[in-house]
Amino acid sequence: MLVSERLKRLLRLVPGQRRFGFYRFLPFFFVLGGAMEWFMINVRVGEETFYDVYRRKQSERLYEARMEKGE
Image (cartoon, rainbow, N blue to C red; front, side, top):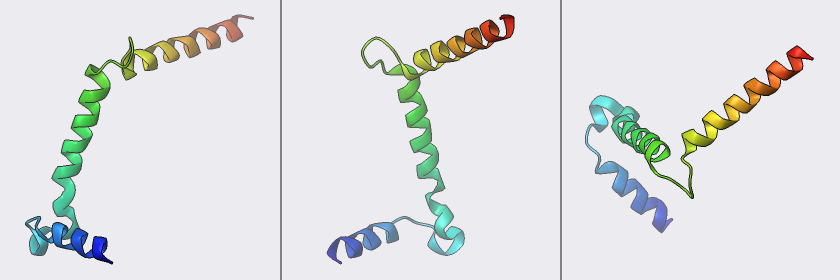
């Protein structure tokens, strides 16, 4: 219960409770989503970013579909 009370106290510190209710947390989620997007585009893990892998897999799927269609 101690963690739950601390969490409730922390959530009460976010302004806008009466006017926006639960939706007062939306700006945090927008910032979190933007940070995740930036991380996936710019941060390299090994030699590739998330989007490098995505583009490569997409082109592989397209190539395989063309080969199946051609055969």
